[in-house]
Picture 1: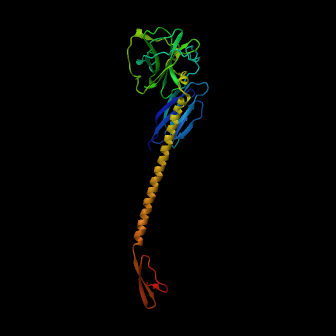
Picture 2 (picture 1 turned 45 degrees about the vertical axis):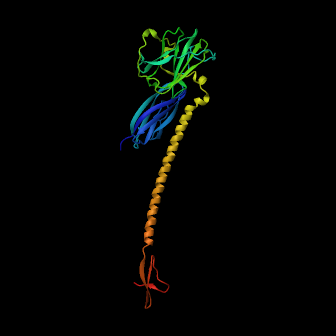
Picture 3 (picture 1 turned 60 degrees about the vertical axis):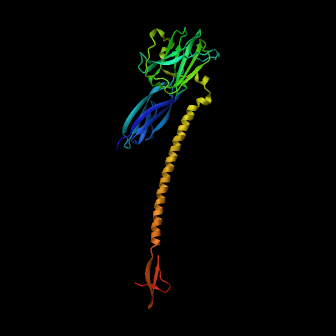
Length: 325
């Protein structure tokens, strides 16, 4: 028997305190086993599946291990994935946690891919054109992946005359779609109006490169230690209605309904095929019975010296007669 194996292992969508671990398998292992740090291993059927993982206390990231297990108990394949939860405790003053002042929002003139970050190859530098700034404020930039809108990669740029482009970073695995949000934030956490823009799939390429000239780039992030790290979005619940935030969960629910519907259809098709097979078998038996019933035979019946021939499908002698041996 060809041993089972894990084909893919992914984690999405990500929220403040949970993430869905998803796997696909090949060659039908007996079981799939999931192990998380500090927890007992959990076994699942040897098919594609998923598990919602909640954030353990005191931990922000950890390795999840998924194994395929054969009928004899042997492990045929193993994959691990690093689960990283968003930072929620933020100390910088440049966070929109106060009052929405309703003042003019920053304006985005364009978004471009600069290329790989010079100090971290897993990050990609994006360049954004913000034509103006607001005195006494920082520029707060957050970029949320399309499949995890409640988390973001955030840039906190010191206020200055806008002489060129601003740089912030996202992981290379970010993808090509997401929602960008901008706001000015003052020293008390009060913030301006919010500029929000959704980039459809394929809008930018994290593998691209461009050179805008060193003198034209502002790289003044107020919290460089958080560059490229996933954080809690502070603007999502101020720009999107709760029912739209629930849309991600609704999509998951629809996907589950579709999956269950596919199973029901498969069961129905199987039952229908069995019914068709049974019907065909019964039809053959009926035809055979018809052929049997349409064939007549003749017997000779005798009573003393009198004899009589009887022809029928199932011939029998009249009363008082017996079949001639």
